[in-house]
Amino acid sequence: MADDMLKSGNLPENPERATLEGRNKFLGFWFFLGGETVLFASLFGTYLALRNSTVDGPSSQELFGLGLVFLMTVILLTSSLTSVYAMYHMKNNDFKKMQLWLGITVVLGLAFLGLEIYEFVHYVHDYEFGYTTSAFSTAFYTLVGFHGAHVAFGLAWIISLMVRNAKRGLNLYNAPKFYVASLYWHFIDVVWVFIFTVVYLMGVVL
Amino acid sequence: MVNTNSSNQKKHFYKKKHRDQMKHQVLTFAMMIAFTIIAFGLAMADVSPMFTVPIILILAAVQVLFQLYYFMHMNEEGHQWPSVMIYSGIFAAFLTILALTTIVWW
Image (cartoon, rainbow over all chains, first blue to last red; front, side, top):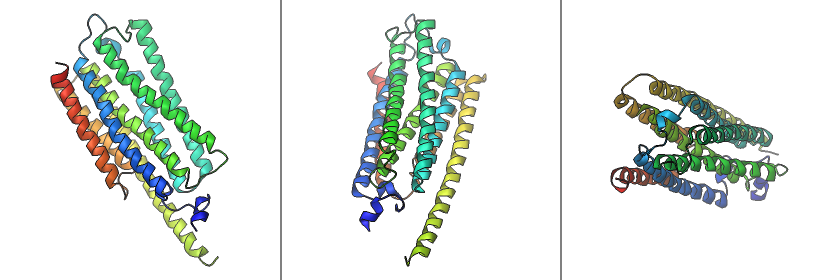
C-alpha cells in the first residue's frame, strides 16, 4: 500500500504532506518564511528611515516611473497565479500540465527579472544613481536588489526541479519539493506587493 | 479490483473540490489586480498623501492576506503551525520596522 502510493498515478490527497519528510519540509519551510519576513522588514525599516537622505543625488520623485513598475507588478502577480495552476495540476496528479505551468511561471519570472535589470541600468546610466550615491540609493538597491536576488534564486530552484524530475514524474518524494518551491514563489510576490507600495507608490506620492 | 468504483468516486470528488478551489483562486487573482490598479491610480491622481498613503498600505495588507490564505493555501486545514510561524514573523517584522524608523536611524 505505502509502496504503491510512492509511485505516480496513485497519489493521496495533499501529496506534499503525505509523508513525514514532506510534513517536515512543509513545516520547516513556513518557519523559514517567518524568518524571511523579519529579514525583509529590516531592509524595509532601513529604507523607510533613509528614503529622504538623498544628499545631491536624485530623489525618488525624479527617478521612479510608474509605468514600468505597473508592468512588473502585473507580470509577477500573474506568475503567482500560474504557479497556483501548477499546484492545482499537481493535486490532480497531472505531471505534464504541472511542468507546463511551472514553465510559464519561469518565463514570467525571467521577464520580471529582465525588466528589473533594465530599470537598474537605466538609473545608473541616465541618472547617475549608483549604489554609493546616497543613503537613499544604498537602501533602495539593497532592498529591491535583495528581492531581485530572491527572484533569481527562485527561478534557478524551479528550473532545477523541473529538469531533475522531468523523467521521474510525480511521486510522494518530489511532490513536497514542488510544493515548497511554489510557496517560495508566492512569498516573493508577497514581498513585491510591499515593495511596489512602500518604495514606488509612496516614493512618488510623498 | 473490487474498489475501483469507490476509488473513481473519490477521484471525482477531489477533482471537483480542486476545481472549486481554483475558481476561488482565479477570483482572488482578479481582486488583486483590481487592488493594484486602484493603488496605482490613487498614487497618480492628485489626492492628498495623507489620504493616499494609508489607503494603499491597507490595500497592500489585504493583497498579502489574499496571497497567504488563497494562493499559499493557509485557508485549508492543517495550517495551524504555518499561521503561528508567519504571524510571529509579521509581529517581529512590525517591531523591527518600528524600531528602525523611530530610534535606530534617527
